[in-house]
Length: 250
Length: 316
Ligand SMILES: Nc1ncnc2c1ncn2[C@@H]1O[C@H](COP(=O)(O)OP(=O)(O)O)[C@@H](O)[C@H]1O
Ligand SMILES: [Mg+2]
Image 1 (cartoon, rainbow over the protein chains, first blue to last red):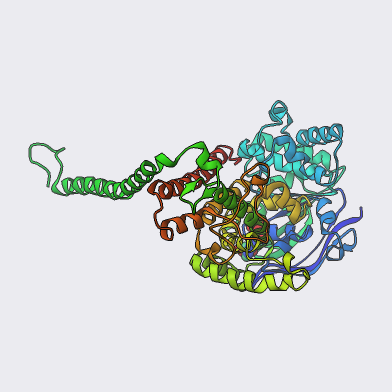
Image 2 (cartoon, chains in turn blue, green):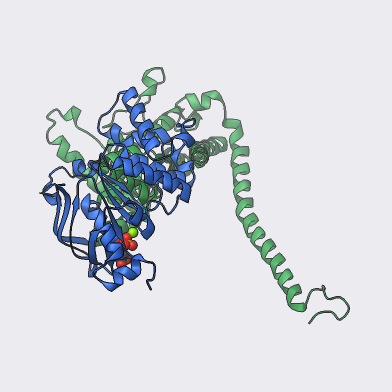
């Protein structure tokens, strides 16, 4: 399998504060790569480097290279085209103040999709993939902000899928969702793997164990180690990794 | 120190607390009454004295005999055009600056300095604005334009244009401030969600931020109108006139003033008939004042109605 994303010596500083310290790793195409680690270890910051939304934070300074299929993301002239290739789901559910339908149709519309049938198809597919369709199919014209927290989180996922991205980044996507729905979404994600590379940031080490092909452990802004799922859980090189993955940290 | 026989009786401390609570309640209510009573009294007084003047003709006829007879049409339509022209300048400039400052400008000392500047501009007395308008527009801008006009009869004078620009400068701080407030009431997370979908900053502003802050922006604009329409000082030296021929027949009556010529306006008309014409009938003075109050109250209630409607339509 070929490399889809590569971090080469990437560091991020917020002013004087170091949030990501010399990360280097490779993510293969059509794989699930999980990042686990305690709060403030730099997981979210690392994700923002991939689609360059880190640039919206004035204080942030990035060094090193993030390569997407071998191309430095900084060299991509049209940053919006880069962002459209990457679906992002952040931990806090955000329904846009639009109808459920328009939430999902938002990005396709900005891309110039006007055809109603085409939009209908996208909306239904994405809502099904995010396990929300059955709950909202009769009220697609309701405000997305009026859904429950867990539903809004799945709406966020549906939105991220609306442009059929080649990479899907999920940042602790399940904290607002009940366990049964989480399981259903995990099933869908395993199918989506056929079509896209999935980066999973999670606090649930069991979720990483179930889904990931590769696992990386982050601690205190450092990439402690990364490797194949089975090896990371059973034969970690560093003692601290084993303790964290087996829930004996702290 | 409870009562030996009744454990539920108030202690001395509790009794005092109850007393101060009642005193605070009535004290603040009294202050409120002191505020409302004079306002009601003034309104009643003015409208009582204005009543004999009110009729349809009073609003549709032009003033005659130095304002001692006739109506208020000329000043009313003058104020209307003054407000519209000033908004044509102040709204685009103010709203766009507000958008820039809130959405694009980096948080640094320049942005902060501009913010402080805008806020201070709101506190500048209107007579200072008047002098600025005189210097910048009447003595600065007009000669500049007139240099390119050969025919002396075509030259521009202090009038609707210069007065509107002066009023626009006065309206700007309020419009900028309320635009910024309205924009920043839209949560940052909405913007981030859009950026993550590959929307540009402008697309995000156009599709999410502006539609959800339009109400706040409009409220600010309306309030600035009601403030600007009542000001006398800024138009004093910049184009307002008192005695002027205004067409009495439709349709000329609907657009009686050229931008480069003096015009009549309510605030200025009131000032002159109050202070400078002897033998002015009382009902004409009070009529003019009452008409202005009505005008400003109706504009303000428009903004209140708008705000209530938007509060009900809140989307998150
Ligand atoms: N916008 C920001 N400005 C300054 N510091 C930040 C910002 N975002 C995150 N940080 C800091 O960077 C570090 C890593 O944060 P983050 O990437 O959010 O970690 P995680 O997602 O693993 O919890 C934290 O110490 C956090 O306080
Ligand atoms: Mg995080």
